[in-house]
Structure formats: structure tokens, C-alpha cells
Length: 452
Image (spheres, one colour):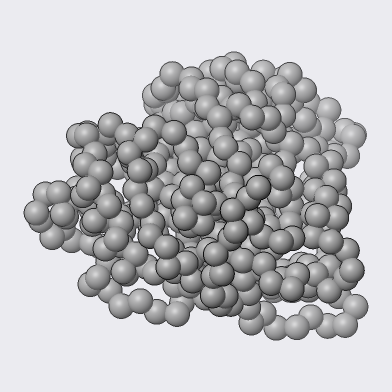
């Protein structure tokens, strides 16, 4: 029998979390950031750093609750306790006092485990950055320059915890989103780039099992930031686009002449588009890029990268995103008001989304905030459950002068990683790799004890 869930005081509706709350809730996995430090981590100092950080970012200690068919953020007065363990704890349930983010340490590693229903990776890193800052200030007895990290030097504002979809303008009556990636994505001055007689649809890597099981493979490689950015600027593009194109080339090197479009799906922050740049709450949407298997393959790499950069920006246009997200939120609220149970709604949505196949995902987290103690940190590892049925999930972040590309797969994908190394080298760059690692993720318990 489950223990009774405490009565948490509800606050604002969790509009930004609806997608993660309802879609495939029985297999929800956490987002994990593992920070490897040069020295052994002091658990007591880490607890002090966490307590100090939560005084500045109290919203990071919130939890989620259900009430009359809707979901809300709620105050959680229970302590957030650092555990010294190498195990990944079940975030969101009684093991972590119902907190949606958990902090543990083991030897030289600090692990942050976050429920995606609570925050996206960019939002969770606000806590990561602040805890690391406070940890090294306390440990070293030095008040380091915080840069743009949220510390006691800066004043908390509502913008940090506002829901990005709370005050979206209403749509016109009868609005239906027009989302046609296979048309508008490859638009040029000559019109849409044809697919050269290939079948419409998305190329799926058939020799890799979809990464939707319990165990995953993790491969990581790094590229010097200055060299990659030199290539990116020369192409008049962006890191996410350039890396996606290189991965597309690597896939075609292993599987020549794909009969369908190789599609890179790039989860991106919509914070700027909805004027919520500072929020920690979920604000991730997706862009879709044809990075192989089209007539663009015959174009020079730089030309393709520039075109697809424009394609990416089109999909981040607020005039497209805001009506689309308003439609999504309204659709969820209609489902909530229906007589269908939460379980039935989630199963219907899960069945719909599970049909989708994508060639690969590239999750561009961006730059990790650093300051004078960054040389005391060896590396960051990002672990998560790959999205949908995609066989390759890539996470990209920049830290300490390097772009770190982490590939999470359901099977050993060494041949694709080796092909990516070759492509990187042919573009005049160098890359270093790490041994393949196998890992598992526990389920989140964000809905533990909720009567839904």
C-alpha cells in the first residue's frame, strides 16, 4: 500500500508541463546531469550549498499535485536532502520527499536528477549552476565572481518562475495548426527542394533498436569550441544545424542511398518566442530539419548549413509558435474537462505518439555557465531517455572550451560514432571520444500517491 501523499499547497496551473504529464506517463524517465570534479565531493558542504541555493531559487523545491482533473505546481516544505550514493534515486516520490529534483554525490561526482514533468534541461541547469557556484565558494572560502549565475547577489523576479503558456493570446475560432515539415522545411528561392523520387516520409535506422527500453548505451565525443565555431560562422549557420548535418552525413556513410528523408529533430527552447527567457519551467518545442536523403545532398556543405539555419529560424517564429502552443494548451484543457479518466487520456496520447519514428534527435542544451572555478570540473554527462522511437538521441553542450556531443542509443552504435569522427575530421576538425558506457534509468515518481 502506498503511503499517503502529504497535502501540498497548490499554486499556479502547470500548463507548461501538460505534454510531459500526459504523454506516456507509465515510462517517464528523469533528466540527469552528472558533474565529475577533480576532487572528492564533500557531502556536508554540498548540502550547505543546496540549502543556500534554494533560499535564492525556492521554486526549485516545488512539487506537482493533481486537483479536480488539473495539475498544479505546489509548495513543498519538506527538506531536500543530499544523499551520498552512486544509485539514481526515484525522483518525485517519497524517496526524495516528493521533490522533483534530487541531488546526490559519490566520490568525485555530483548528480542532479530532474523530472521532465517539472522542468526541461535548460531550466534545471539554473539549479545546477547555482549549487556548483555555492559549493566551490564554501569549499574554497572564496567569493567567486558569479557572472550570470543566479546567486544571493541577484534579486529573484517573477520572470524566473512564470509559466510560459499562462497568458498566451486566444486563437481565432476554428484555428487548426498547419504543421507541414515536408513542405516548408526545405524552401529555397527556387521553391521546395524535391526528394528526387524518394518515398515521402522519414528514414529510420533499421539496424539499431529503438532506444525505448530499460538499458541504454552512452557514447561521448568532444570538439574544440573555437574550431567548431569557426566552421559554423563560415557557414553562416549555428552549432545545432552544423552538428545535425554532420550526423546526417555519418548516417549516410553507414547506410548509403537512403530511400527516405533523414530527419533531425531538434528540441529547442521557445523562451524567446513567448517572452519567457528566464523561466525554469518547461519551454521546449521541436524543430525538424532534412539533413540527408534529399536533393540538398548535392549542394556544398556550407550552403546547406545556411539554408537550414533559415529553416530553423522559421520554425521559431513567434507568429507560428504562439498560436500552435495556444491550440495545444486548449486541447489539453478540453480533455481535462471531458469525462475520460487521466489514465485513458494518457494512453490515447501515448498510442498516438508511439507511432512516430525519427532518424535521430539532437538536443542542443547550449553553454554551461562557468566562472573562475570551472577548471575544478572535469566534465558533464547528460543522461536521459531517448525521445519517441528514435534510435539515436544526441545531447550537445558547451563547457570549458569544448563542445561535448553525447549519443544515447538502444544498441551499440560504435559504427555510427566512428563514421561521425570521420566526417568531423573531413571538415577540418579534431574530436576525442570516451569509452562506451551502459546505463539504466529508474522511472520518475512525480505522480506517486496522486489520485488520478
